Image 1 (cartoon, helix red, strand yellow):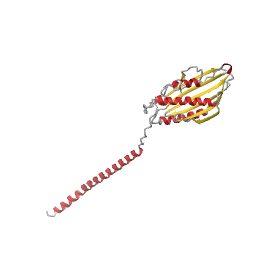
Image 2: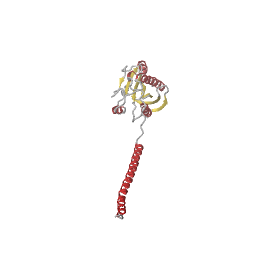
Image 3: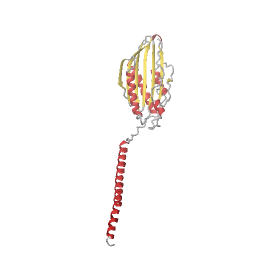
Image 4: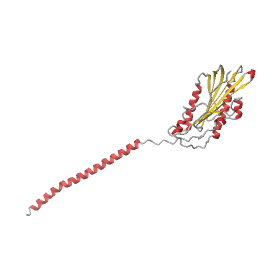
Length: 275
């Protein structure tokens, strides 16, 4: 009987070993699983952080939120001086789907001097305003891009002779005057176009003239001087009346489409009188 007691103790001890091993094994598996989950979570967090795009800084608000009336942007006295005997003293407005984005006006007239011939003049002004857009850029940057395009376009005018371009200081933030000659209806026309930018608005002013029935062609210097004077007035009108409050409403998709030049028309064709 005394020998059985030690033997029983040994049996119980051996029976307990698998239970302990199982317990240790479970404890070991649990620990390794936790480490794996932690590593996976850390890897996922790192991946998310690396894949996140940085937030773009907000674009600068557009300076101008509206445009002046194109037909009153040039003083009446200036129009009378540049376009004697204008057919419409108040000008002819161009069609626009949104006058807060684009507007234009033109004047033309034939000053008949009898046996001394006649003098024809044509004047036009056009405004284009650009809103700030998070995806397209600030209004000023977009206007600068358009300004550059318009200058290049005027330099490449079809049929132009003796084309020249020069900076026009004192008109807006930046301005370029393009001059050239063009033959139409067997007469030589002198042209001057001033493209200017003020803030987020581009102003394009064109002035041209010709002499008919033996009258002399106006000098290039006089045409350029008149164009610069009118352009300065038009730009000043933008600065004075175009709602420069430093804030703008967010442009809609429809506004972005309106900023596209396609579909808009010039204020009036540069019709020339019959000699």
